Length: 159
Picture 1 (tube, rainbow, N blue to C red):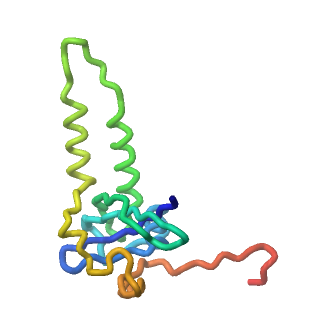
Picture 2: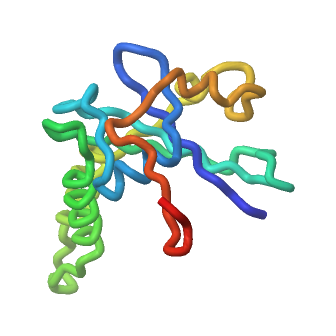
């Protein structure tokens, strides 16, 4: 069964906002930014949705992350740091058979505190139609990144 992911930002000062996939992709790739959140940490939830015949049918799971926006409102640098830290969590420790290291558990705890949060059921109550609104545009509320949509021009197409 095909799945899709919908992203929601949970700013402290307002209701949750649905992020367009184009915006999330742009943030991850370093092509977009959200200056309104410069120099802040924001909670983001990913909602994995099962689809049937191109229509959402069921929520598979949710997960929460914390994005740290830099002075321009970009997250790429923070995501690279998070990836590096995540990779170091799996490093094998060299200890003897009689000594058990607490380092892996402490690293995991620090990582989770810095980059993860657990959305509560109250957080996920985004309205009676969540996550299958009859009017999806209502969830976006004019919310945009700093970069405009780009048009792909194919070589045989006039510009």
